Image 1 (spheres, rainbow, N blue to C red):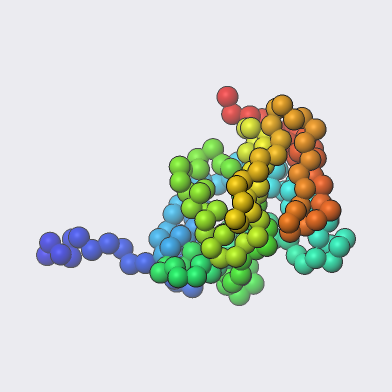
Image 2 (tube, rainbow, N blue to C red):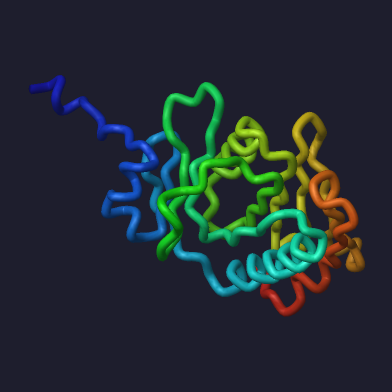
Length: 189
């Protein structure tokens, strides 16, 4: 009886997660374990939409592929990982998760991000083959650019009000003025 009490919940695959009740709420699957998330707030949503809109315009104008929003469920293949890692959005997506690593991943920091989880996500993106990760911080008015094999580069901040984020190495020629992205967005006190 003691052994049974010590057993933990079973790990889920991405396909099992699609059918799990938690998938109907804000949640993600990380290495086979479900993590509940808070819904995104207004600031987060507006910032993610502004970035996605600008990226979509650039990508479509240059015939570079497709941009997915932060609500997309995907399966991030991590070589050598023992468990599936995936995120499920609200709503429907075509036949399960996308099964690929994005060339560019954009993470908008949330007020309830737990220590270490963001670093874990960045490491997972890199392990899966993502070529660039942007970590957007609305409070600091910065974007930390993570490229595998290089130290993070921070763009923006109050000392650089006219900072422009470039798309290198994934979207050369892209220029995003940070003032336009952060305009009208409140900061946490």
